[in-house]
Image (cartoon, rainbow, N blue to C red):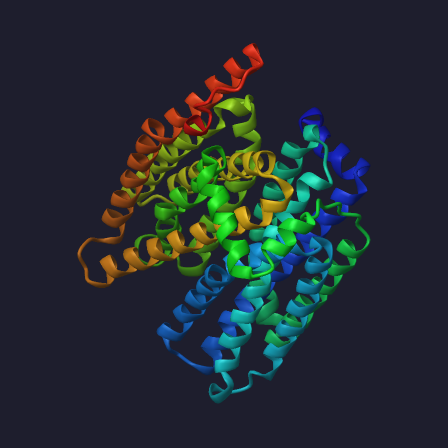
Length: 433
């Protein structure tokens, strides 16, 4: 067992710049999950509207999505280390502003402040992900992303649980203060890290001084380089249906298991643990990076099959097992696509590419949840029937991925091998990207 985790221990022990960036992620993610339940509690305290509670989720998603293109431009043009520190400190101040929400009349502040918080998160996340290759070696890069994914899942599981208890015992005000402190601590870790970054050349900086030009060039680079476009699509294609499935776990706990928040906590814990373990398992099964794009399609098919079982059963134990397995496949997909993007994208474009990926992920997740809720609201299908339909469609998406995206990737890999053997560049390289 120790041999299996030794690479991650060595990475954190020996690479102090990655360690500080990783610790920043750990404390800021904990603060995020720790504080989100306090925001929900604040809304339910001053309003009994289910619409207003759902609206805060929409505000979070749409704020991230709408600001992502501009955020990517910023993270490529300016110093990412300074940007991350600034984002942490500003988010800490924003969260502290939630203390001003003291009545129904001031509830609007929660939505405005949450939108602002997510806008700065839209800058922080691509800056952080783009920085990982700059503080790790080629050999360390996969371990670094696996550790980041595992940390996210552990923090998700613990943070939600501890956050709920803290909100009930300490009150929302103290939770917001603790959340603010987590952002300050995150900024301190980043301040102590050295994060190299390749700067844009003078000609490129001058050419892209207009943000719209810089954003447009990012999109053009993505669509001109299909070897980058393929892994960029992976998370969006997955969450196009997985987003609705994870949303339906809330309703399954309420209406099928009749366990309310207890059942939801268990199901989401299985989700979190699966997301963390999945990349480790996936790396062992698919140990060659040339197979990773094909593996993403298999992960979609597999996760869909697992969720179909969840939709067919009424047993909590069976649900926990298959939710765990489904999200293990999701976690593997997440890390494989992230690593490929980090390797294949030049540093000066990396922020824009990751922000575009985040944009696709957020939009497809929102559409998935809204469609599922609309189907259920109109009683077109039961919860379990809707879950089965979504699960089967996810498997179909994986099959389509296999016969399209995977085939294009195989042509690209074969071209790379042939080019390496002949030391010549084929004129048709662009078509095979």
